[in-house]
Amino acid sequence: MEGSGKPEVLVFGGTTEGREIAGWLSARGTCSVVVSSLTEYGGSLVEGLPNVESLTGRMLPDAMEHLMRDRAFACVVDATHPYAAGVSASIAASCEASGTPRLRVLREGEPEGPWAGVADAAEAAQLVAGRAGNVLLTTGSNDLPIYVEAIDDYQERVYARILPMEKSIASADSLGIPLDHIIAMKGPFSKELNSALIRQFDIKMLVTKASGKSGGFWEKVDAARECGVELIVIRRPIQEEGLSLEDAKRELEERFGL
Image 1 (tube, one colour):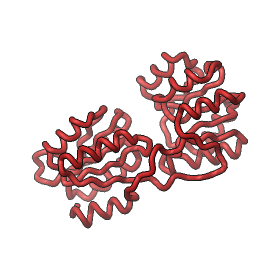
Image 2 (cartoon, one colour; image 1 turned 30 degrees about the vertical axis):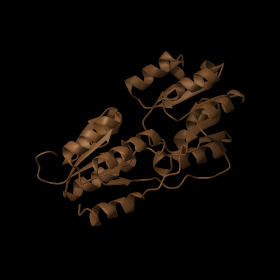
Image 3 (cartoon, rainbow, N blue to C red; image 1 turned 90 degrees about the horizontal axis):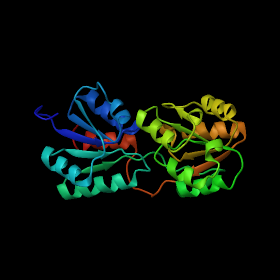
């Protein structure tokens, strides 16, 4: 935090990895940490951690660069979601412009398996539209308009699992998704819970992102396999270079002395 006399580290990402890095640095007590996350939920992941300041809300590139120049961070850790490609690009550009070192934390490599891989939500929606049966969307609320546009009978067939936040629920409701088709729950989700939802709503297709272990991906895979439903996986938008969580910690400790 400003005025503490300790070096500061800026962590982007209301993710499991962001929470892990912030918690690890907080416990070490070698620096102050500023965590920037898009949502209040992301900010809640670091709430109460000593020496950690939370910033929530969308940060535009100019604001990123200004913050970096103003606070003179020892380094920036980009622990954003693997599907937040635009945000990562802005972080990289802001770091370069301000001369701030950057570490990119990546989840494990994109998995491959016996499922239908698609490029994006639009392709997933077209695939669902051409199939029969109910679909469980587990990719959040932002892409729901794409499915509503593509699937004629979405009000009967689409079930959306989203975060239990007022904004997300209101967004789904405004699109005409029936309230009894909105599953507002906060993960992580076990295979058993995924399987129970699949059976409860007679799901025939499950749409997910390749979000890795920390995103509960394999629990969805196992549940889909157990229940005999089709799994549709949205591939990651780009292939990035970066560090594992453990390698990032090692860099922070050895390179930056934190």
